[in-house]
Length: 350
Image (cartoon, rainbow, N blue to C red):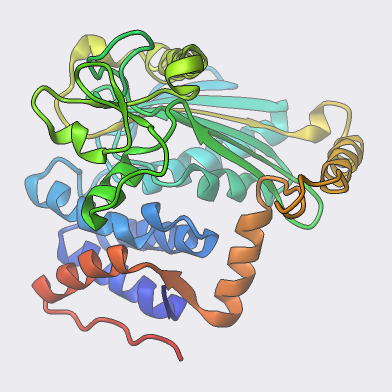
C-alpha cells in the first residue's frame, strides 16, 4: 500500500474524467465520491473505477452531459430515468431530493432506472446518516449476468448489493453487503492480481465450487456463488430476487427490456427518525445496542466485536492524518490511465 494526498488524487481523477469527455461539474461530483470511497478503505470502488469509466465515456455508453428525467412524482415516491448518466452524479441529486422530502413526510423513496454505475453504497448512505437520517439503497444491473440462481449453473443475476446507513453515536453505522458471496470488483481484482480466492466462492460451468476467479471468463462461463454458497445459497438467492424486485420492478425497467449496456437500477429510501418515535429515542436504542455488541466477549484470538462502520471510521481517520492508502493493483491501472492521458501521477507521501 502506498499513500497519497487527497487533493492530488482528486485532481487526477477529475482531470482523467474531464479528459475522457465528462462535463466538468459531473466530473467533480464523481471524483469527489470516488476519493471519499478510498478514504473509507473500499479501494475496489474508489479511483480504481476511473479505469472502467473511461472506456464507457469513450464509447458513449456513459452519458457525458444532460440531466435525469423524473418519470413519475407522487410526493413520497418517485421514478427517475438516469439516461445512463454517471451514477454518482445521479445519486447525489436523488439523495438531495429524498432527504428533503423525508424531512417533510418522514419517508421518501425513489426508484431509478438506466443510471450508470453508482459506486460504493456506503459512501452514499453515509451522506444521509451524517445528517441524522436512515438511508437504504439497493442496486442491480439488468444487463449483467454474474450470479447463477441457487440450484442452477448458468449466470443470470448481478451481485445485487444493498446497504443501509444510520446515525450511530461517534460515527454512522454502515451496513453494506450483497446477495452474492463476493463482488464483480473483487473478482476483477483477483484476476488482475493473478490470485485465487481464499474460499470456494465461485462456481464453474459444471456446478463445482472453486476458488478460481477466472471461471467468469471461461467458455462456458462460470459464476459467483450467492450468499450461503453451496450449502445455504438459497438465502442469497432470495435476497437477490428482493433487490431486483425493488430496483427493476418498481422502476418499470429491467431484464424484460434486455438492455445491453452496463448500467444501474436503484431503489433509494430515506427515513427521518424524528417522524417516528423521535431522534432522541432512536439514538438511545442504537447507542445501547452498539455498546452491548462492542462489550460482548470476543472469540479468543479474534479481537473485539466491531459494529459495521467502525472499520470505515478508522480508515477515514488514518486517511486524514497519513494520506489515502492504495494497493498496487489499483495503482498499476490508474498509472496506465494517467500515462495514456499525458498526466503526471501524484507523488507518494513519506
